[in-house]
Amino acid sequence: EDKVVQSPLSLVVHEGDTVTLNCSYEVTNFRSLLWYKQEKKAPTFLFMLTSSGIEKKSGRLSSILDKKELFSILNITATQTGDSAIYLCAVAGNNDMRFGAGTRLTVKP
Amino acid sequence: GAVVSQHPSRVICKSGTSVKIECRSLDFQATTMFWYRQFPKKSLMLMATSNEGSKATYEQGVEKDKFLINHASLTLSTLTVTSAHPEDSSFYICSARVQTNYGYTFGSGTRLTVV
Image (cartoon, rainbow over the protein chains, first blue to last red):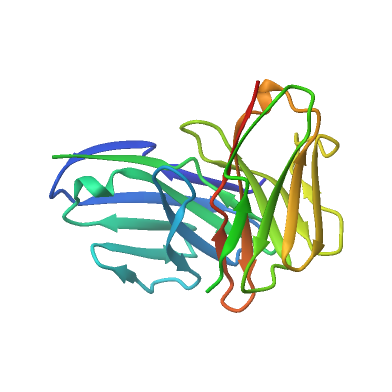
């Protein structure tokens, strides 16, 4: 059975801290792994990863995929209170896209 | 580019009635659309995958007669919650695969409240 497992489920840090969010997966017919940030409504896209070892960066956020070990990490450096959200990892197969349970990140001032 | 318009954003209905949620791709053709349900403080649960012109594939435990999905055109997929009950109250959201870059784009979601 396909599964996407995120850890930790919840994380509380202070502004300026660096966080690493984890996503491991077991899916058939892997196409891509995606990271989303969800605050109040629809998730907003962060990264799509298809190849191992290539880091994607956007400002203070970065992510990398390991297709051999079947996991991805999302790093956020110099966290800000505006980073507080649920971070969702999704894995897309040929005909589905499944989400992990999410990591709820709280950044305190 | 790649925008999915989802309507309505919020709906309140009485028990026993049916509610239709639409997802329309505005500037691309969505051959595949995913429908998700999200409970408060939980992640997105895949309900079904719809492919244009064919029957939707439902996830285990999702009642196909209750959650009717129609994907009759390359730009429109609909989810109808039939004979709604209070336990159907939830946040429903669609996502479409963008063929050109293999990415995915979400609708803005529909918050359904059944009273």
